Amino acid sequence: MRILLATDAWTPQVNGVVRTLTEVLRELAAMGHRVNTVQPGLFRSMPCPFYPEIRLALGVRRRIGNIIEAVAPDAIHIATEGPIGLAVRNWCLAHGYDFTTAFHTRFPEYLAERRLAPSRLTYALLRRFHARAGGVMVPSASVRQELSARGLAKLLAWGRGVDPDLFNPARRGDLPDLPRPIFLTVGRVTWEKNLPAFLSLDLPGSKVVVGSGPQLAALRAQFPQVHFLGRRANGELAGLYASADVFVFPSRTDTFGLVMLEALASGLPVAAYPVAGPLDVVGKSGAGVLDEDLRRAALAALTIPRERCRAYALNFTWKESATQFLGNLRPCRGVSAERPGAASTAQ
Image (tube, rainbow, N blue to C red; front, top):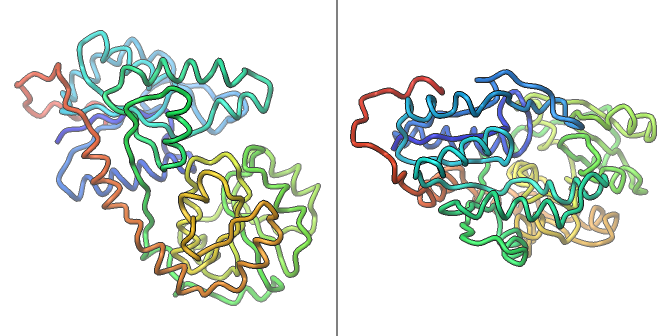
C-alpha cells in the first residue's frame, strides 16, 4: 500500500507519539508498504506555546493539495489534531477522500488544568475533528471507554509495542555512584507528568529522572537530592532501565505510557497509580504494583521477579501494532487508478 501519514508530531521531538509512529513506519516498510509523511519539517513553522520543542506548521493549506495528489495514496491517516492534521482532514472532506485519525494525547485535560480552555469545549472540538473519520484509532481499552462516554464513535484498537533487543535485562550495570534501591522515571519533564508525586516520596536509596523539558530547572531546584540525568540516547537509556530497581510512573493523564513497556522489557517492575495507561499496560499481570499510595506501590514492586516483567513485555510487539494499524486503515474513495510513482514529494 501507499500510505500518507499526516502528523504535527515528528522528529526531532522525543515523545510517545513520535516513538509510536517511527516504530510502526519501520515495521510497515519491512512489510513492503510505502509511507509518506506530511510533517512540520516540510513547512515554515513556529514554536508551540508552552511546548517550544513542538513546531506548528504554517501555510499548510496552500500546499497540502499538491502534496496529497503527488503522493496519490491508497490510504490516509491523520495522527494529530494540529495544523497539519486539520489541513489534511479538510482537504479530504472537500475532495471525497476517506481517512482515519488517532487519539494520542489528552489535550482537553492539559488545557483545563492550566485554565486555558474548559474540557467541555475542547472535547466538543475533538468530537467535531474526529467525527468524519472512517475510524479513530485509540491505544487502549480504558481510553476507548472514556472517549465513547464523551461521544466519540468508530473507535478502533491500535496497541503499542517494544523493542526487546534494545530494552533488555542483559544491559544491566552496577551504577556504583547511586545508592540502591534505584527508583527510576523516564519522560518529558513537564507539569502534566505529575513528577512531584514521585520526587516528594520518602523512599530509600536513589531517585533518578531521565528526560528534559520545561520543568527541569524548577524541579532540580526543588528536589536537590534527586538525580536528574537529562535526555539520554537509546543505548544509554536502555542501560539505565536495566540497571534500576523499580520504574515509577506518576502520570495520571497518559493515554498509554510506552516507557512502562520499555522498563518491563528491561526486567524492571513498574509502580504506578491505578489509572488509564497503567491499568492497560500493567493491569493484573503481576509485573507491577498499582496503588493510590505511590510510595507503597514503589516499595512493593521491589519484590517482583525481573524475569516476570521481561516475559510479560514480550507480548507487546511493534509488528502486531503495525498489523493492527494496517487493518484499521480505510481506502481513499477519491483515489484514481493512475498511480505511476509520484510519491517522493512528502518523504
